[in-house]
Image 1: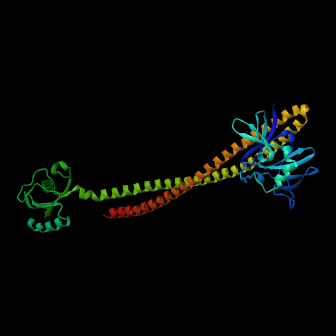
Image 2: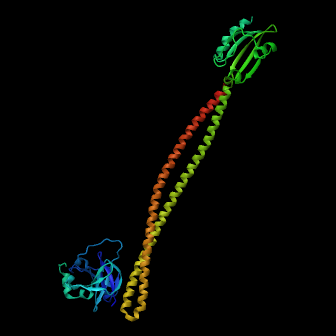
Image 3: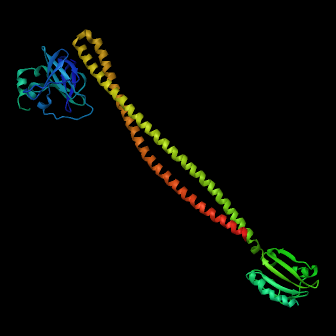
Length: 147
Length: 271
């Protein structure tokens, strides 16, 4: 069954997220840093009439800063059961429509990545948007642990 | 006495630098012949005067005889001047001088040569002026080209600004298209048509961005070409300057040559 995904980049690596989890994509906005917040939390930002938390997974995934001139950073707003998270990404590539999906063991990245898109030229890990909101993951993200 | 006139022979001979033949004769024969180094008369002391020659005619006409003889006679073209010597109304003899034509003509030749030289130098001078003015035009053209290429460079920079604008519009359009697709998906079946539109918008954005990239490449290429042109123009400018300097040097040489030629002409006139 064909599903739609938003393909984006963290660093040089492509990831995907189900489009059904995505509320919208924004240009980077002014982020208010929350003192004392975990490292992966960039801060909060005002989007339309609401406030959302902006997170940066690069630190957790151990992804280095790129200084590519071709990328345009965006904020992918993920929504799950009335909760919103803004995910900072280096670039939004395009919309993928595919059904070539493979499962991988959920121990990888604490279950935030459970599937992979198989394309001719590359493999793209699918970020499980809903799992990002769970407490366990939040704990993991807050910890110093790297996977 | 005719023999007294013989005292003049050394004088005349030496004054012609020994190059001309000088001879004294009475009414019948040659009394004294001094051969010149250049013109050698086929006569000796004691030879009879030959009928028809200048010497012979001078006695019998009682007048000076001047003849110009071509080179076939003695191997060299010469002038002969024969003067009768008269005492008491009667010719007692005469003196003849045979001198090479060249010596007489030499100052004519010199004058002509100096004149030709001066003419040639004038022509060269005129030609040099032409070259100098062409070099000047060339230099001006060079400046114009430099100015034009500078203009092109500035235009290329302006184009770059426009391209950047296109880029930013393409980027915004892409974002718009993505969000439109997301909304269309959320709307489910109803949103399908809208989803198609959103897809098209995204395609447009991609193609615009692609065009912008291509234009950028072209602009970059133009800039490089201009850079090369500027280098070449600098060389061109340097070369033109060298040419101009050389022309000036030549001009100065021509001037001093002309001066010398004029001095020569003056000297030739006064010979």
